Amino acid sequence: MVILNPPPFGEAFRYFSMYDKTIFPLFSILNRGKKSISLNLREQQAQEIFKNLVIKSDIIVENFVKGTMERWGLGYDVLKELNPRLIYCKISGYGNEGLERYTKKTAFDIIIQAEAAILDTLDLKEGPPKLPVADYSAGHVAAIGISQALYYREKTGKGQFLDISMHDIMFAINMRAQAREFMPMAKKLDLGVKFLPIYNQYHTKDGLIVMTTLTERQFKRLCENILQKPELVKDPRFSNPIKRFNYVDLLDDIIEKWTKSYTSKEAIKLLEAERIPCGESLSMYEVYNHPNLRARGMLCDQFDFSEYNVEKATIPNRLIRFSETPGEVLAPGPTFGQHNEKIYCDLLKYPKEKLKEWKKLKII
Image (cartoon, rainbow, N blue to C red; front, side, top):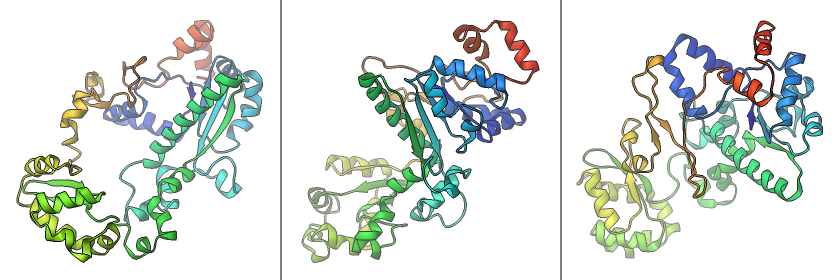
């Protein structure tokens, strides 16, 4: 797979790391286990090198502004002639097809979250988003699409072009915004704050826990066995989930009076005994101590980042566990152009002298 990482995002990491080496572990979180080559696609000779790489590749993923690859003579129509089995995945802010005003617009995570009403839905009235959910979601959807395309190619021998819009994805996951269109209750409630009854964070003696009761059996067990208030089950205000929508705050007050009587661990132990879905609401500092993440080997802290002035940095392990091909993260993120020789000389069979020549010509 070839992933093209154009400026300014790729360049941002490169230049930030020049002034502050401690940013490199963050780069590793996003690029763990990958190989890096440098190639200036604006140069005609580099474009020919890239075509040779395409011939040996199964997949290309790129997120340039629409028309950029075509301007360089490297659009899908050209590349599929070189490799009919090629799967070409284009990720962009607003998609490759659509209104030109948007398809040719440079877009980043914050812009897409805003234009898909994610910021409003999450009640972020000011400031930037706290997580790049648009970027991450686009990558995950791309991986699913590529897998489907690979399966189709296995059956037909044909590659294809994948058009992935970050804006499409963010709209699709914004269920709260969609619910406002057709659910009377959704129109009434402030979806930016609370959506479901008993679907919230609750204070304890020493922190926060989360819990929910989405089934009637769970609600009954909570009232009778946990809160010791069986009368709530028969209370006409709470007799079914729809009626409970109208008394979200009242139910939360009742529950929090109970949770504040216990520590987080004590409350969770009691809730789990009654099979009430719950968990601790951890801080960014506490999550690294989650026992199940460590038990699953999700916390990669074995890499030496000392040359980047970082004593310790934990990066995520693989996200999917395959029974036959389990895989593992063998290396942190690569430095810029770290694998030029391995790819150009070992894979594409260019002589090493060429690399020196290309560097002088600023091709790599």
